[in-house]
Image 1 (cartoon, rainbow, N blue to C red):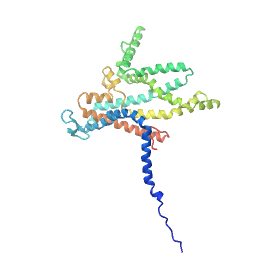
Image 2 (cartoon, rainbow, N blue to C red):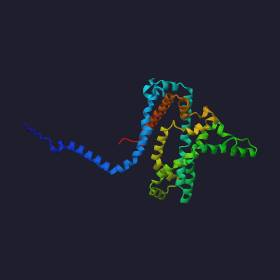
Image 3 (cartoon, rainbow, N blue to C red):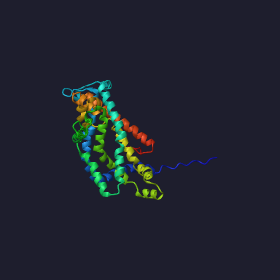
Length: 329
């Protein structure tokens, strides 16, 4: 014979938990608003700019699926044509050439340009003299603030057919060179221009990461007999590895964006066969000809590819134990 089971009534405290949690969350939201309203007010102009110039214009990508008539129909009056423009893109030899050139330049710069800011930051970080380090930082940062027009003009004066290098070679009985108009060396030219202009500024992020490494680790490694190279390999590089992975992911997401102005200014010198990249293709095939729907389709393709590359690279970073651009909480 079993004893009867006595069920206690539901606790009034448990029954009232949900309303209390809702009131607490509401109060917490109001508390944070009272605490952070100056910061929110400061961020409001930037958020308006982001919404006005980034998020709202994204809605205009609908023209990639329309027979867009800007002067008669507009977005709401143009006829939908589905994926017709994308089919035209993949059957266009100019588009395929621009795509191949862009990917080739991106892959080349990932190998030969991406490590340069890291090595430059390591070099400046290892300098013992603070005055020499400050002077070197000022020198390597300065080209970043030059426009691409000025940068290309400087390279023209140095490496052009009538440039300084050619004049020195001719004065010593050799034939002059004109690397500014040589399609075969164009990929080397644009990479060297990017390194000279942007590597110094890119080293700032790695210098900040190096400054966050605990100096006691270097002292302990030196006491244990580790040399300079071992300290670099086992302390410095692991210390900045998360930053390297983060910037590498962002660079992969920006793979189809190698720069418009740099290639646009040198297109006439080397020809479209070598200098046609994705951004110049969108300009010449979409904007300049008035085929805005065709250009929008190319731009949308570029954005989707960049998103896929970022997600794939971020997933690979998670598999390797790194945080990446974002991670699930």
